[in-house]
View 1: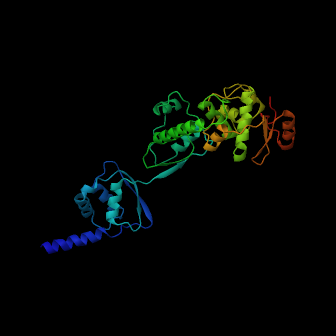
View 2: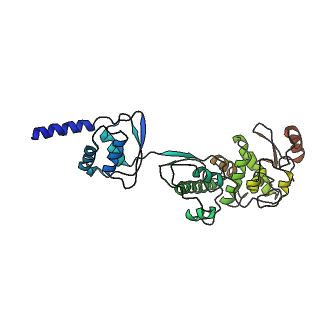
View 3: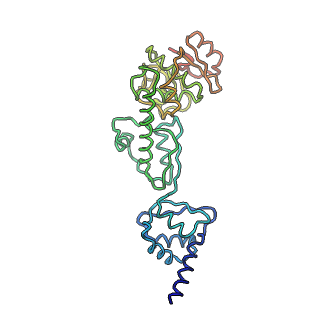
Length: 330
């Protein structure tokens, strides 16, 4: 009888060493509160197991000392044995997915992007921006500019607020570090002002070699109490009213973000600046520039006096779009 039992055990053991029925790879979700029995049944229903589900549950019970199964999404790989599968769902090594937030997105764009993700838990619906910042422990901050654009990993079922929490912490850490390494002296008074200006630089140019020069233009204007006259801030202030066509009427409309009418920085950032824009702003090399005009190829021409700037405008301004600070500075 003992010999028969040992033979049976040996057969069972060898069976558990056989690969599961997966071609390539497949995802399998262990739901919260799942048991070995329910997991075995679910695996059998998907024809992943090549052994009896009750036998698989029994194997799990006699190896219970190796730990409980853990909820989450797991990636099953072709060639994995039945024992490997059980070890995997005991390990908690769940599938890591990715979300990428590009530089220059606004907080509204972040919210819409998160809302479109089917595999994260939605908790932000119906919450105001202020309520979100309260939940993140930063009730005194406007959300704009407060989240670092990057690629973030997340597991299936993770809450949208948790992803925002990590991005918010990252931006705080980045700004603290970069502010401590600033080389622009007291041109701007604090980290928040640095973040605001970096967001404007982010939106004004995507051409890396021009970032420091763009920052220098704005820093020089701030120090001379000149209006920034940034299209990007005006467009942000218009919000949903902006249809892609910035008009002279828009430049005359009073709102806190109209830097044609208001001196100094706008009240908040206008987007999420990336590391390159932050560094270009806080470590901008001194330059005499007060003006710049887009060449039409993604680069800009920089001038330190109005006469030269007007010549550049005449050369590069190829449309009759409304004047901005680059084409008709005040």
